[in-house]
Length: 239
Image 1 (spheres, rainbow, N blue to C red):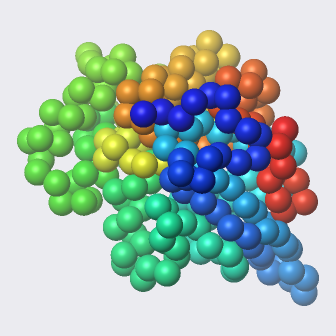
Image 2 (cartoon, rainbow, N blue to C red):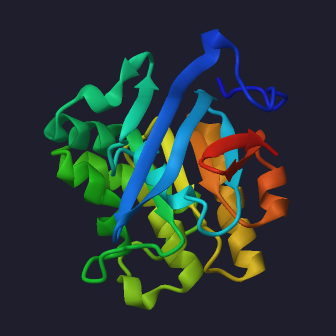
């Protein structure tokens, strides 16, 4: 069941913890100096919970999503899924975990232009080696949910920006991930289209109990999430 919306600003009940970040650290070398981006990020997430992350540009929000999405390894700290530190896994094991457990939606859709909408949505399942016919059926279901039932055979260049982002959203959840990470998913869209994409994220969250972490500069969208946290000085703070 999705987590209730009235969760405390800085924690969830221990029995409801699904993902947990403990003291995550990440830095980058810039010339002779070291840039400390994440300086002990703590975060607990319940199943089905929706969290918005806000903050000034350059504070490390995308870096945080890359670590939470296991695209980048942290320099320190732990990222737990059901009590297991995910980063103790090998790179190959981590890649498999990411494919089956994480979904990603970015400001730019990153679709493959040579493939149709249907094929783009199927791609994570094809990479995982799932049966093609069943995968195609599920992809059609998802494209129908996001209002693109009539656009399944269209290639990326034949779709509008909003349609492309909806394809990216369907692709992100084809594996029914435990966690959807969205980095400014509406930032490249006009307000009306962006709000519709946001509504679809909410609908899919409710339908599949997918936990959602969304980075956004839109205060109206952030206010519609279960919790809103601010990333500042390398740590998350209640907004």
